[in-house]
Image (cartoon, rainbow, N blue to C red; front, side):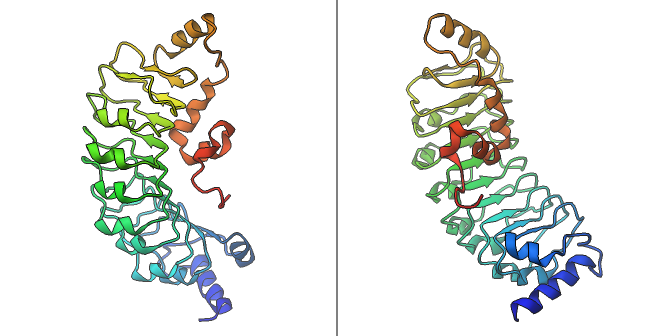
Length: 293
């Protein structure tokens, strides 16, 4: 199929689907071609129209906030995809068709019904950012440890109680979001992950935090909404977000050890993930896709 005819076919589907599954989506093909981006969010789609898969040039595809449970086999034709947003759908399993999309660098699967990650997922060798928050993970998906490019992992609002010891092999991970899980004890393996720069363990059940002063690369730690009575002990210069953090900063400032009164707003990047990392200059090194802005 020629590119022009593919555009016309997809434009027809996007503007008026027979099942009314995908309507009112921008049909400006010049804009789609220039931006290499297609937005089909908030369209109540139950089945992805196959002609969309003819857009083989598209690099950014947003299908968030729909009713998808699966993807068509033809989806594998989108070989140039770098960013794929499938969050806020009804997936119970990770669509295997995306597991061989070698160019993917960002994948958003949050707010679905996932419990496991398939073995084939490790084929995504260039994946740098993975968002699987607000799902039903009870165990950490060990397949992820064998993905060397991952730098940012969002697993907030799941059902994790422990982390595997071999997580220490996750040497390229820089940002780790674990808020809203079920940790009662601070996972000891995190103390061995000295390459972490951002760590969020907000909204768990942790009663005591260990000494973390040796985590020299750590820049930002959120620990709020835990029953622990004392804030974590961290190295100078680390931004703490949680009860007692302001008092600790004030005490350090009085001692002349640090003055970080402008660092409080950095909490915004904890829940916003890579978007915040891109806009906050101090944490630009964690940008998941520097070439895709």
